[in-house]
Length: 443
Image: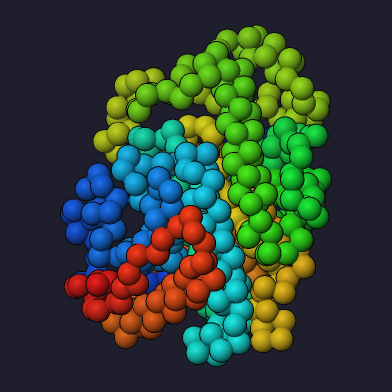
């Protein structure tokens, strides 16, 4: 295996960081629930998700849907997604009302899995939760962190029993596969966090009690802090505040501007290239001058210089070959288009009756920029005090019985969510469906 030319971008001591990239194996759905060709290819998301739509929520000019995922990240998960056509891919593409409903649905999920009766009924004790949002509006060729370009949020929960394999987590330095290392710890994982932190200097978070944390690679490597740029929130209740929806919207605009500035330094262009193309790199001297003009620290500038030395132009002939080859090669050789990031919300405590997740006094909001890694924030996250856990999906098939149990969990959550948000005059809940069987889906 060739050496990783991006190795200079990784911090010293990273080899000691615990990773679990082959530990959490999540089965796929029963055979009769597998995606049909229409569900894979139809341009209208309402047609694609028809068999998996649990409930629709009409929000002003947008439409949100609670969806049973075709390839789950856990037995206890679902997705809330904007399902208008054409797709609206970013936090800024939807109305503020819609974004507010999406984040309050995430808050409702935290409340739901913290209910002692729900914990007992579904054996959720000692589990962990993530709310994961991926944003990659401009990558329309290679595999992306946001495969479906709709603005959506993953609602994810793993029971303590499911998390037990993480006790056998290994170390980054023990992984010999350079491609896997680059996919799981993106070259921008640490440098990108520093860049985003620097770009937020003087940025008003607008959420009382929220704090932008200083990057600390040693704490991340030890597992005391998640990967990415970290914003500390004073509990889950902030998700119900309109100021939080506004924060996510403004963060996206800042990331969009930062991405355009960097693209201009490296290529002289500010807009994303067309599919199966990448802008040519500027001459090294021009890149050096562009980096010198950026308002960043010497350390960040040095990191960007290392990045410029590691990047290569992508000839059109190579891009055409990549379009016909397997995903592994595309993801190794072809960058994602910017801005591209995973945003995760996670409380580091375990969920137990008497000390549930909704009681957490601190919630981590992390932003992980992506350059090569096509694994989104729902499939690559921190769990069980392991900073980097890869969720291996589609490992065998769930039984019909376990899928019915999953359906009961999802429907009970939908009922709880409607009770919490149903008095909002700006939205309207559609009929709540029931999981019939794998062939029929939700009806």
